[in-house]
Length: 139
Image 1 (cartoon, rainbow, N blue to C red):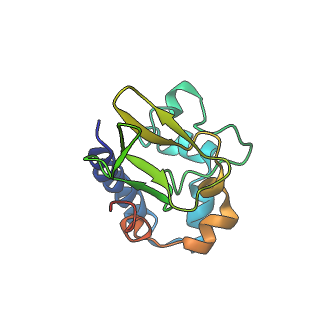
Image 2: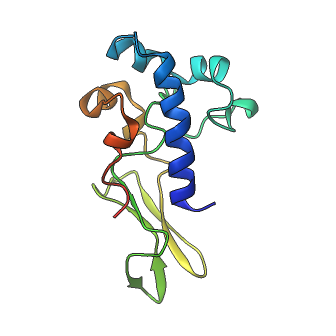
């Protein structure tokens, strides 16, 4: 699945949930998106919920920012690096991030980064419109 296809599908799922939560406060919305609650109440939101698996090994995982607003992607590729096509990168160059290289592409590996999954961070970038928060990810 391409980044753009995933992005579009995920934004629709997020918007559907937010429509149901429109009467909640910001703090209540953020609390609602805690992994355990989402796994129970929104099982279709993430395929990992059915496996009782978290995408990041952190105790208080919040799924509001399933994708990170610091992630940048272009399915066509940004530029050539070592004869490989750069498809994604971290705009803040998180020390917890890394690059994943395949035979024909380079991708950002966010698996060790917990920045967007902490409620303190979510509050600093929060918008009820997920696409607005993610407006810079597609360059």
